[in-house]
Image (tube, rainbow, N blue to C red; front, top):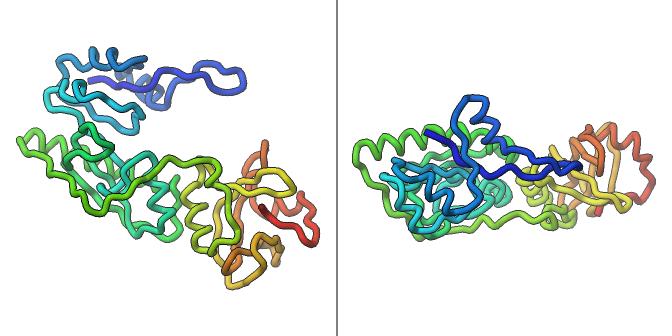
Length: 275
């Protein structure tokens, strides 16, 4: 048994090489960890192997490599396929207001998350869940799905062909789309912020500087879109429908803080707005 992860990459201001979290996990448990630089290196690592399980590896594996392990290659994907194939299924499910998400273990083929399915498990989504929280929940659920899939393989069971109906694509998230549009409906704003919390982070502008925001709630108040109001001890922002209360902000170059602490330092003036 061994682990394959991405090579160490330069990080931080000093651009020193930093190992991945998977590498750290393996080293702490004395599990052999490989960091191949190329597909041929991966191919050699799979000689004589029984199975390859991939989880967010980020590299498209060629068809010849997929047939290398005795029982093929499986992938753990954080959605109920065929919904949300692609790079950001967790965030896109929350952004779309889905009532459930889940995990799928499937046999890798040459398509993007198109292979036949071994195991699927669903997870009901609370209306206030963030992508950070959902990643943690699905990581736990994924262990069960992988165990079930390995049991199916040991029993000689075959995966089920994936449906071509209900396919949606979870495209990669860009920084630009994480900017809050305060003229949208409040529910849409809240869903987008929860989806992008905390990576890459939903953001807006204040006096020309960027400001990340999180922990929003919809109020019964109404104000002009993007306008800033202090109601009691609550930071309230107008949207295209109901106003929104902001719980926390992260100013550029500073640590995350509660909204009231930010207000006390910002010295708001009449007419201040976000965006």
